[in-house]
Image 1 (cartoon, rainbow, N blue to C red):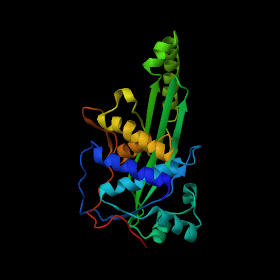
Image 2 (cartoon, rainbow, N blue to C red):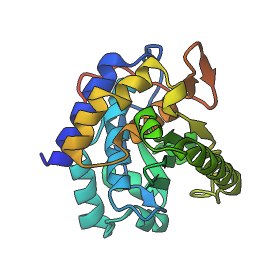
Image 3 (cartoon, one colour):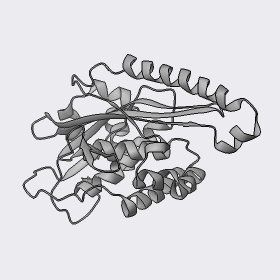
Image 4 (tube, rainbow, N blue to C red):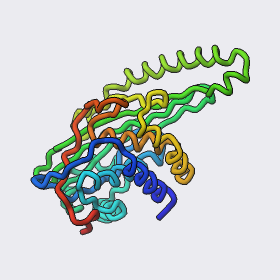
Length: 277
């Protein structure tokens, strides 16, 4: 197991132990038991982003009572039997063709739209945005889809403000300008093109530290620092929060759970957590 995978596994352990979202309940009537999480289409300039989001998705799906096909096995089948190594190449295949090769009840397809950070020392901005869909292998139809963008903004701390005369007003001016630019960016990219012929709304959710919940404080605190150090990935915390909101279909604002989408349909109770063919 390489360092990236082990770091993400540690992150998921921290998250599952301290998550504040309501517990999920299995649905024995759901015919979908086994799921394959396919490589994500990468519409960003970050080569690691799709790996991070796909790994997090596969790990969290087990918390929704699905048996997930090992990612390495999925990749091997796609490469050897279909010549597919990248998420963008999946456009050439239908759901039926993918399901025939993978042998699962459903497949998860995703598109990563944003995985970026801007660090200036005065104003910092981190963003993760993705869309995901669950296709049934029996019917070939999309039975669930969701999208989310999370952003976290921060300013220089109080110590710096006190040490440098006039810096506070300068930072305020920079923050205002940056916030305006950030807001314009949000509006400008609110409408994304269809993903595999599906319209998927992908709203932005601000998870800045000054209004984060206890759960987000954990992610951005000691646990997040440990995982980020091990993984060497600058957006692991934001990616984890995005996956939680995406799959659960609501957001904890500190006082209540606010619905914004639809929770992925829980799978039935399973005896194992991996499936092979």
